[in-house]
Image 1 (spheres, rainbow, N blue to C red):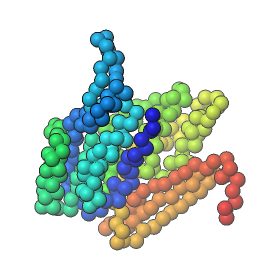
Image 2 (cartoon, one colour):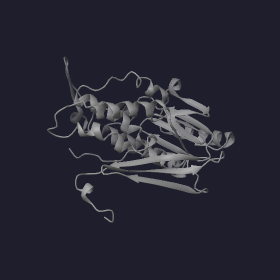
Image 3 (cartoon, rainbow, N blue to C red):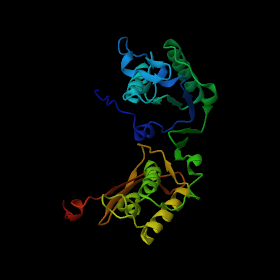
Image 4 (cartoon, helix red, strand yellow):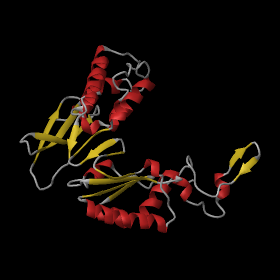
Length: 280
């Protein structure tokens, strides 16, 4: 089977569109993958076994190899002009619409609803939010002027016990990597934990690992926020480097006269990169 590599939208691209936005609407499509029919003659390829024999589905469902990419391409094609106009973002069956004022928002809402109706796509009203000034989307709380971590995702951080296995380290880092844009010097801070993931590395939870673990938890629990970048105002980039990692932060001055972070970036250095001279 040929793997469909259709890309999912990047969260960073979403944030670039949100400057000046005041009103949001979040929609959740009903039936998800089932909205895409399987081509006639190909149903047998997705057959599944039950105690009553084999059944061939007529619509796409979760866990098929190309379901995710196919559905993203399907919904992007339907809403392509709205996406290109820059006021609509689609991530699988979640749709985010945003506007600078209520009148503009209502006009866009009507256009979007007509488009969904035209293609027989229906919503889950209980999971939709209309004309709000704060919305949770892709694990982030989006508000006019800034974004923050979803507090629901942070509820278990304080009680997260130190990992006892490599699998548990991966789970903690998986959470951390998702929110790394909120944390300065992230690659440097996680180095002791990432070292535990090395091939043929004996699992040894050292004091350095515990310090890194506790420090990361504290940073997540501090609930940092990132301001929306404004291209009309000056930026400041602060960069830093160590033997193990490089990092930077993009800042912009707010109305309070203080410099606020727009995003953090960090990268661990490979063994080869650690041998580079400064001019390399």
